Image (cartoon, rainbow, N blue to C red; front, side):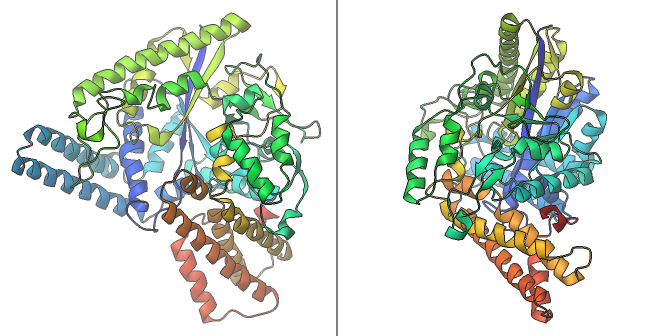
Length: 576
């Protein structure tokens, strides 16, 4: 036996249900369900029937769970499938008219794909994707992890109370949907910050004065009863890759007359080459941390991960696989294969489904061999069995890489038949193994450059100029309220304000703007939630001063709640 292996899939989408349809509204959510979640569920079901224990860790962000469980979603998804079925039928007829007969079988392929997707959703999964995953949680194969409520980026939030609220709401939401408390958490964007004196890098002058010793993220996790999390391997090694982004970031902070001590703090850490990514470690950034169990960290193994996520050197870039970027101008459906790394979109060749399927087996065998080689090297150096942890965004499997779910299934089958590597998940592994060493981690993420650049740069600093005063104002208002004795309307106002604050804190808005995605959509959504929050905080201020709500106030609250009704059991006490 060489050791063990686990996939960790990060399953997340921002709150889009009820906020537009295409291309960045509900279609975004439906696309993920059709191309990723349902194919992965079908693989897990197939393997369960074949008695192949496909152990896997997956986190489900609370904001995603709330959308999948929303009573509006099933009809939205059925409509989405029907639209795609109609588009495939139209393409089938179009290809006859244009004499592109070689594309007609692929139009039928898409017709079958979405028809089966619809059938599975309605009949196999009973219109409830969350319950379908819960079945595998109850069977013990799926280790379901939680995350921050709306994927707020922990290292940059203003107070520990905001991190704690994101986590506690995440735990509550997870328990409500899966019936058990989670033991692990996916830190949004793998963003981690140790204990030290911190203050916001941007924001108004009065907020800049918020300067105090902040708890390490691991301390808050321990306080909330969470046992493990996952980080980028460079953090485990103790180093931060210093790219041009850091020079840009430091100079930008200087321009804003803001201290960059927290960036320099990262640079004080030295890289520890003797730390193996195939070991687990306890994490503690101070000897004054909370007593009790120290959270454990699993490290992303770059070697195996790169083979899967990289379109340049990894499997998804193979010429046989479905080309993501080229879509038919009539339907948006895809009919071509990658063909070659440097092949222009106009020169892509027609997709061959059978050839692509055969490639998934070949790549699964190569992947398992790479896992074994990595574990063998670890054992040779340390004399111990290790664990290879390969984390990915779930959307990679099926959406970005259409054949990805098939690849997952074949890897599970190969590992099941292999005597050298045991397939596990994080929770099972931690039940049988304890860390041999407790370490301190530097600050960082799995974002570009290894730090905070993606979420704090010239293009998105304005969002934090809004977020920090709103976080501060909300926190002070909560402290003025006695939650048990507050009248119902005031409590409802603050509860909805909490929802809007959580949505404002979503890291997705900065990510999309920085990566030049749906900039207008993200900006609009951020501004909407910030505006809602300001209106609700103004109303709460007036109520606390003795004002009485009128019909217009009640209408405002009802309107905002109808648009954003997530986290029905949210408690404002989490910010106290």
